[in-house]
Image (cartoon, rainbow, N blue to C red; front, side, top):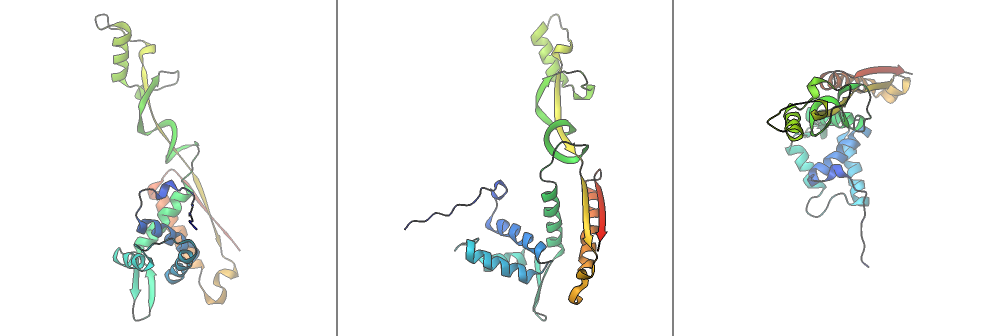
Length: 224
């Protein structure tokens, strides 16, 4: 019997190598295992058995070797432990931020790229006629002069409002992020410190938002 495997189309996976696709899964799993590499790889092995995320040309052994060679994990032979590196931590933070800011609506102007026209840094190739409220900075003078020559001729050059062409830019949006941290007894249950990693996440998120999205706001709420 001939069988077919179907999966939901993911445009983000287009053009990615097998390693990059598996790396996305690995980093997602690390957020659930609190950075435990061994547990994340164990989950990946289970996913591979059930959903065949690898193939004969590139298996889990190849992926783990690439993780080591590319500086995503380090091994301690004496302790028999595997840990993630600063490179992996930064990658997880970046992916988390992009997941949060991936689908934006037009709100207050900020530093997040959207597909909405408005005032921003990225100019659009298309122009439109002048409208009341447009600023002088938005006028495309080259296109406006060309319109004036076409409409009125070169010999009797004249430019009026109907000749003006406006070049818009992509609007940049502003967002607000709220981080909630549980400080109840469960965070130190069985002698395991979960509060310190939560603090590190808060500090990392604060640093990234401050440097990359300075017009955004970050609020941290503790409960427990």
